[in-house]
Length: 326
Image (cartoon, rainbow, N blue to C red; front, side, top):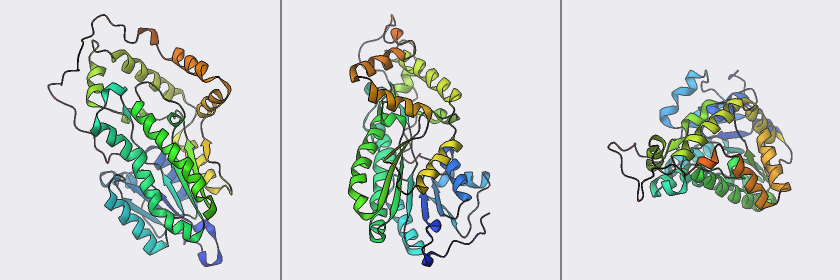
């Protein structure tokens, strides 16, 4: 499968486009990697250095048209190195898929600077920096595609996911501006918006220092928020129709479209929430969602809730790994 030679680009065969995928060693990224291996694209699949063995575990080995590269998307030197290597050997990136991401579960009161920056670095700042690095080559060729993997959380917010929603809303706003900016150069930009996916990816959600405490202490004010939302999200993930493979196929279709949309909702629930936002008055929309939250009447009503700041644990959770997007 990997021995196929790339097409002769001198004849204008676009099927040999150079595709860079971040966070390709697990979940949706791995599903997309497998989807694209069956095509004539020339691929650069990236992951953190510690996650690179996952490719071999998945039966993916480097070849003439496939590179496997270590990339911590939050490190400027690593971003610059990989884009420079691609430009030197393959003439630049034709399709950038910003897939790497991380999710923190936290109410607004429970995150601090280091945790906020860790979330925004991976989901917002790093994708834009990669876009900035690949654009000069795309503009010179007057063609290219940028696919930023967003989320249904980029169109609606959920309690206990404030940081994650903020990062995706920021990505959506910047990507929308980018869509206008690069159309004159023949560059297409798309936000892929998955909703709930039937996978164990929710187990990778991180907690901040304070949210971790609240999960395990029933007397703390937001304990019910975390417990009920956690089980609610787990149920939705377990019953979702969409899988990483089905979403990977949708991303591939977007990559092949002559005029792809700015926003591509790729799951049933993403379409549903988009429809609700368009049809319902905003005040009613928020009331409907609020009343749909699991056991929301019990939130914040526990009898014994201490006042003042949350105490530090005897053993603090480890600090966030800012390069954790796999």
